[in-house]
Image (cartoon, rainbow, N blue to C red; front, side):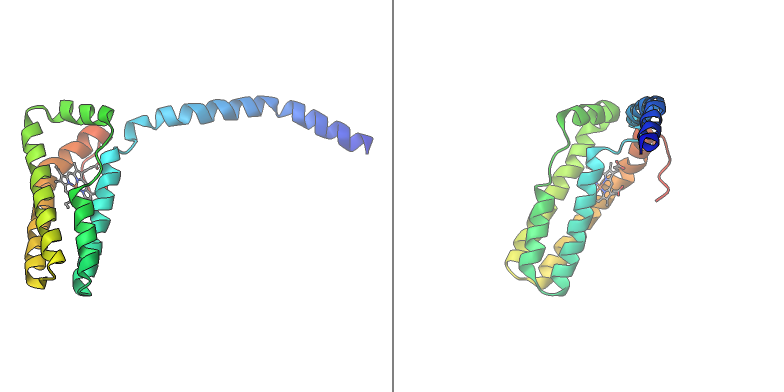
Length: 158
Ligand code: HEC
């Protein structure tokens, strides 16, 4: 009994440097990983992608309420935090108006799709969906790769 207690105490004592080391490693790691930390924009984009899938599903089922909800979620997507916006704007510089125009077009096309869905007009909603998808593509073709290279230091391999 006494022996076990002793051993535990000694082990606890010997493990102290490890606790310190672990704490050190754990506190350093996030700093080291900072460079590759994904932008909040990337999370917003992932949600946009999921909402596009929800629209396809809504249109396939003629569930226009579902398509409308997802289109409105795209139109009113959240904004990245101010600090990130500043980073993004200082990177794109003179291309900022172009970037904002793509965002504006996407917003307008998503609104048009929401309206077409609300009215239950399948053909109109499908045509609006195509337009919306094209506005996503236009921005991706212009900006995705430069963002990937600048913020993550890699070429877009997806
Ligand atoms: C104003 C420009 C712009 C518009 C408009 C835009 N995107 Fe993006 N999107 C980007 C950029 C920049 C990235 C790369 C972000 C990154 O990797 O951090 C991206 C990345 C993505 C990704 C990949 C996310 C991942 O998993 O890495 C998806 C999915 C996506 N966008 C969906 C959409 C959809 C759907 C729309 C239209 C409804 C859209 N985007 C409209 C700029 C835009």
